[in-house]
Structure formats: C-alpha cells, structure tokens
Amino acid sequence: MQILSHKERTYYLEKYQIDDFFSFDVSPFLEVCQFEKGEWIFQEGLFPDTLYYMMEGKAKLYVTHKNGKVSLIEYLKAPLFMGEIELLNETKYTKGIQTVTPTICLSITTQNCKEKLLADARFLRKLCVFLGEKAANMTAKYTQNQAYPLENRLAAFIQLSAEQGIYKEKHTEICEYLGVSYRHLLYVLAQFCEQGILVKQKNGYHIVDEAGLAYLAQEIS
Image (cartoon, rainbow, N blue to C red; front, side, top):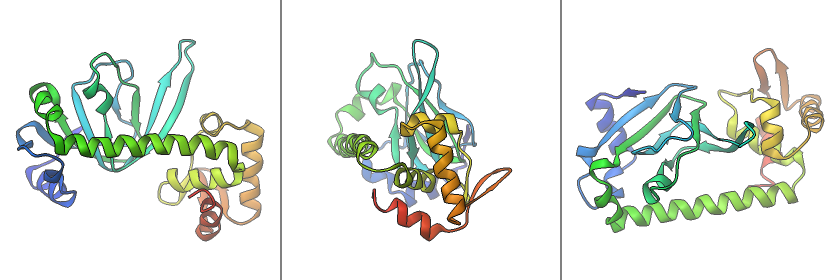
C-alpha cells in the first residue's frame, strides 16, 4: 500500500466529494492510498481498525471454510465501503479482500474517531444506503443464478471482471461463484469464441465483440 501525496489526496477528495459523507472534519483521520494489483486490503481473520472507501478499482472478497476450501464470495467494484461491518460490530472479523486492479481508496483509521463516525447521522445515512444496495445486489445475484442461463450470467461477469478488454479469471473459482460445472463453463466460453464474441489467447480471452457481449449481459441488468 502506498500513501498518496498531498496533491493527489486533494484531487481524489475533491473528485469524489468525500466531505459530503461526513458532518464533522474527518481530514485528520484519513489518508488516500493506492493498492497495487494483487495486494491484500484485508487479510482474512484479522480485526481491522481501518474503514476503506474504494474510489477506483476492483477487488475480490474471499472466505476460507473450516475444511480449508477458499471460496470467492463477491467481485467488488468501486465505489464501495470495506470494513463497514467491522466498524459496526466489534465481534466480527474480516474476510479476505484482494485487489485485481490498481485500486485507489480512502482510508480512515477508526481508533480515534469511531465514536464520531457512529454518532454522525450524515455518515450513517450514507452507510445505510450502501448496505441496502449491497443486500439488494446479493439477492439479485442469487435470483439471477436461478432465473438466467449461464450465457447471460457469464457475459455479465466477463463485463465486470475484464481488464483492458481481457478476461482471465480462474475457471475453478468462477465455476463455484456462478454455481456451474467446469464442463458447462468451458462449453459456454467455447460458444462465445465460435460466435466471435471472444478470442482465446495465451494471456486470456480477448473481447472482440463488445456489443454482442453487452447484448447477452443486458438481459440481467
């Protein structure tokens, strides 16, 4: 993690109007930082004392089960809060969050301002809206898995996770995330290649027909 300069900090705070999130002066308690691709924002099982607001970037949320199996729970995309549950409930420990692109975050060390945050109606209102949208998105994901074929769901996921027009997620991870068999996933990817939507290369699947991919994905959105 790299703390950005004062000039960069000012740029991001103004760009995303962070002052509007709070009714008190939060500037003494915050930094603007950058995580490189593949860095861990939260290590699983720790008790973090930092609240993050992802302004730019993407990340993955993981959980490790008692049997040692690691599952991808969600694919995270800015803007969003991270560590908000730990702020609200001290008994909770965090799940693992790892970046998949360079990521810019607002970082608030909560040790010295937790009471201010939890008494700030403006901040809590913002947080409630975010938590409501988060719950709605999780419900939508569950119902989509039941209601839509893999072609639509995979197209939407490729749109979300592709970086610079290249999709290169691990098949085993995405099979579990989308609730499909490995064979079924490969079959649909092969279909996309036959239809000229994707081209398989050494570094992943290149999106060559963005309109075709968007057409399949729009059924869900």
